[in-house]
Image (cartoon, rainbow, N blue to C red; front, top):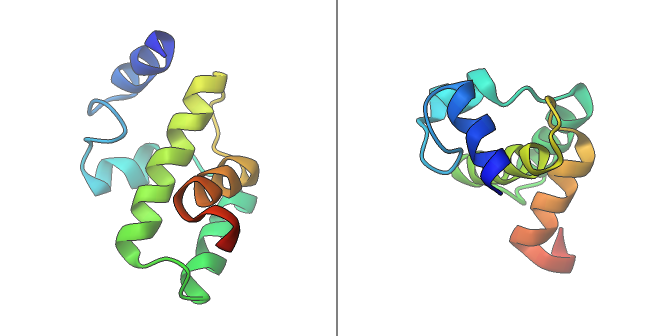
Length: 88
């Protein structure tokens, strides 16, 4: 957890849960698969715009905990599951 927080601070803007949405968009580093997963959830009305932002923050944090530079579809899927349970 300490290492993930250090990564977040080094990336700029502070911790994932507290950074501005524009900073999040610039620093999330989503793979194509992750972008498609988020877009699909939004199109199916599973997530609102705010929900997409929150799931992106959690997915970015999951990637940070693994020491990964990119957020993958797996990170997004897990973040969706954490947010919605089996309904995701």
